[in-house]
Length: 310
Image 1: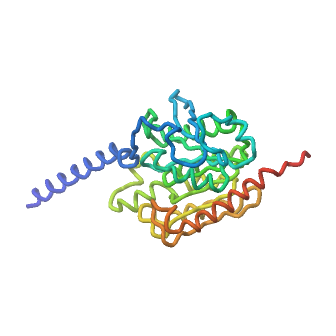
Image 2 (image 1 turned 180 degrees about the vertical axis):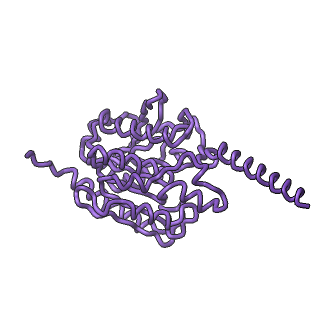
Image 3 (image 1 turned 90 degrees about the vertical axis):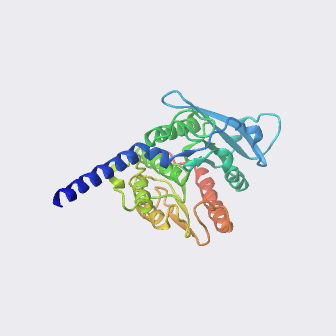
C-alpha cells in the first residue's frame, strides 16, 4: 500500500512539474493578445481631427507603425506640416496600449483627447496591428524609449509638454519609461495610468492563486518599483468594478508613486464607481473627461513657464 502511495505522489509531482513547465513556456501567449491587421492607414481613421501615419525604427531595426492625431486640425487630403503644428504648444499624449487589439480599436482615445486640446500619438506594440516582431517586456521597454526619442528629437516636442498615457499593460510600459526618465533627471509633462497594476506578478496571483506565479513569470512589469522613481505629475484612473485588474492593485501602484512631482504637483487618483476594466470611457465619462481636462490644462500651463537662468 505504501508503495502505491509513493508511486502516486511521484506521478502527481511529475504531472505538476509538467504543467508548470507548460505554463512557463506558454506564458507570453497568455499575456499578449495581439490582433493583426494590414489595413491601418491614417486616412481610414474615423475621428474629427487630422491624423497622419508615423513610424519609429527600433533598436533591432524593426519599423513600428502608428498614428499622430493633431488637435484643432481638420481632416483633409493635404498632409499637414506636422512639426509646425506640434510647435504650437499643445500637450502631446503618447499612448501605450494594453495587451490586446490594435490601435484602430482605440480611436475613441484619439477623439476624446483631441476634444480636450491635446495632440495624440499611438504606436501599436511590436507584433500587434501591422507591426512586425514578438512582444516581450524588455522589447516593449526599448520600443518605448525609441518612441520617446522620436517625439523629443525628431518631432522636437519638449519633454515638459509630453504626457505618457499607459492603458492596462501599457501602464507597465509607461511607468517604466517615466521611472527611467526620472533617474536621468527628466520630468515629462505628466503620466496618466488607466486601469493598471503594481506588477504583473500581483495580477497573475489574482487570476491564478494556486500557481507559483512569482517563480515562473518572466515578464514581470514591476510598475510600483519604477513609478517611485518618476518625477512628473501623475493622474491615475481606475474603475471600482474592475475584475481584470482589481482596484486594490491600482491603489498599490498609486501608493508607490511620489506624493508630488518635482514641480510640486500632487498625484491624483480618480476612482470610477460604475466602471469596469474595458469601459473607462463609459458610464463615468464625465469624471474621466473632467480629470483629463484639468490634468492637461496643468501640463500646458507649466510648459509655458520658461525656467529662469541662474
